[in-house]
Image (cartoon, one colour):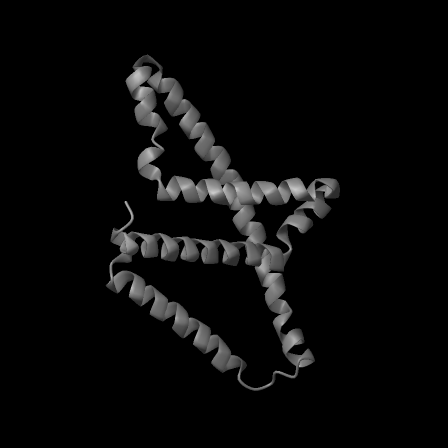
Length: 160
C-alpha cells in the first residue's frame, strides 16, 4: 500500500514538474500573447491560454491512458459498415492536427530563437561574465544523466 502511494506521489510530482516546465517555456517566450497580438484578438487571450492547457492535458491523458482511449475499436464493434467514413474522418483529423501542430512548433521555435538573442543582453546586465559556458555544460550534463537513467533503468518500458 505504501509503495503504491509513493509511486502515485512520485509520478504525480514528475508530471506536475513536466507540465510546469512546458507552461513556463510557453509563458517565457510569450507565445500566446504574440498570437493574440498578430490576430488582433487580444480580448480572447484567456481563452487561448485555457485552450493551450486543455490541449496539453488532453495529449497527456491520451498518451498515458491510450489503452482506454480506443475509439476505433469501439466504432468497429458497433458500426462496422461505416468503417470507410471513420478512415476518411481520421485522415482529415490527422491533416488538420498536422497543420496546426506544425504551425505551433514553428512559431515556438521562432519565439525561442528570439529569446536566445536576449541571453547576451541579460548576461551583460547582471554582470555574468564568467561561467556561462560552465552553466550550459552543466545543463547538458544533467540532461544526459537524466536520459541515461531513463533508458538504463528501462523506465520507457513501464508505460503501456
